[in-house]
Length: 239
Image 1 (cartoon, rainbow, N blue to C red):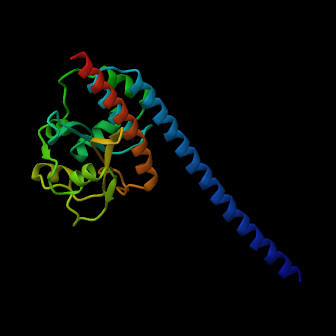
Image 2: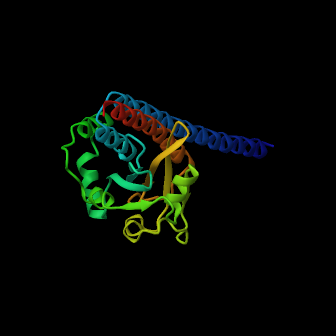
């Protein structure tokens, strides 16, 4: 009987330890989510306080890629041009190589989100990193093949970890996007799509894009789209 008693106590202790471990894990996940929601709120505050559209775009992508923000490796923006016939590469933030990724991480790993957003707000006009330079060269017809243009036409986010899915029919962009997991997120404002934000985790140990990360990126994309649309309307009125 004594052996049976101690056996039951051991079983109960193991079960309690398992529950405690799960509770700690849930608490950690909730805290991480809360931190990201606070980050989105901070980024939104910066977006609302800026009138220069180029800085607005940079602020958003800085938040998407920063360690205290949404933590994606790279973010790219393709926006509808004035003729409404083309998607133009407008801005990209992130590395093109592992060496560049390591160098950037070592430089900013101790920087707060606020500091990075302040740097983005004072970014020198005409200064472009290698990825940004390449993305700005790309123009895509709205009827082009691939997930990026389908995302724009359908107005719905899409992700893939499968190599065989066509991301884009543009060979230059295809080389940049590679064949790792990636997400395409439409920028929608007032029932129309203004562009597409592309994000990935290319240089992270786990490159898969989780549903939670995608939902958070969609939240920020919606706020960016609304801010961008309002700024473009103001510009038209001024002209």
